Length: 258
Ligand SMILES: Nc1ncnc2c1ncn2[C@@H]1O[C@H](COP(=O)(O)OP(=O)(O)O)[C@@H](O)[C@H]1O
Ligand SMILES: CC(=O)N[C@@H](CCC(=O)OP(=O)(O)O)C(=O)O
Image 1 (cartoon, protein in one colour):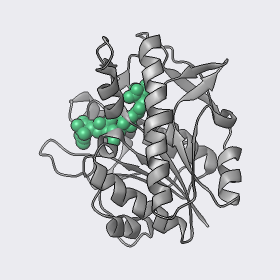
Image 2: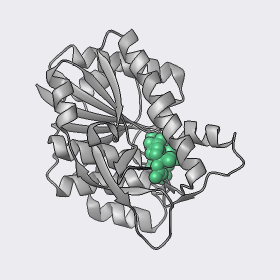
Image 3: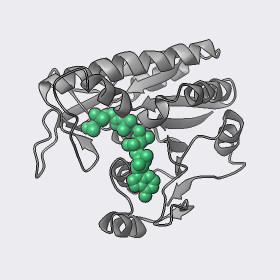
């Protein structure tokens, strides 16, 4: 069985039709020779829910500044609304899905992220305990993972690209794919960059070609490569059949990182 970690971004997850097609593709793959773990974001959903509060969403280098009030909303949105929506859709497509977060079974243990600026309740994953995922796989389940993590009894907000990459490394995944609302990493002329090296990434971040939510995606991908992961793809959504071909290695669209 091939181990595949797929991260689905919140930018795509708010598109109902694409999400339906995505869950159809994942259900199809789990009926074949693949053990799939889906890690999801939900940044756009969180922004919508935060609009119900009096606080404004704020991001620094693609990471959300997370006050206690925002944290409540982040956990409710990710580990509740988005997680259960994906589980429902997967079940509806015939997959056996279980929704968990990094808190469950201490999948992701985190500590406060220290840096130049205080991001509040944003954590760094210090330890991954992938047994809960492998146990679920061995019992025939497809885990759907929210990135919210646990540390000293507290919930920590973790960027979903980071959580997915940590999980992929801990599981020694055969493939790691990050599906977003853009067809891949784009150059200045908005063309997809097919192959991206770490040196080139530094250059593109420095000159502003790569910005916002794409920064954690590329940074985490290269950190995962340094820790032994082979195949990483950043891609957009076309349709279930094209995605299945991508997973089977029959075609490559989007950006391959190496
Ligand atoms: N060079 C780039 N190529 C593609 N997208 C980029 C680039 N630089 C910034 N972005 C932005 O990154 C976004 C994807 O990140 P994000 O919104 O966090 O997605 P997700 O919800 O999938 O994690 C794109 O929608 C785009 O606006
Ligand atoms: C610390 C941090 O920024 N956490 C993210 C977690 C969700 C996420 O990463 O969602 P996307 O994949 O849709 O961007 C946030 O609060 O938006």
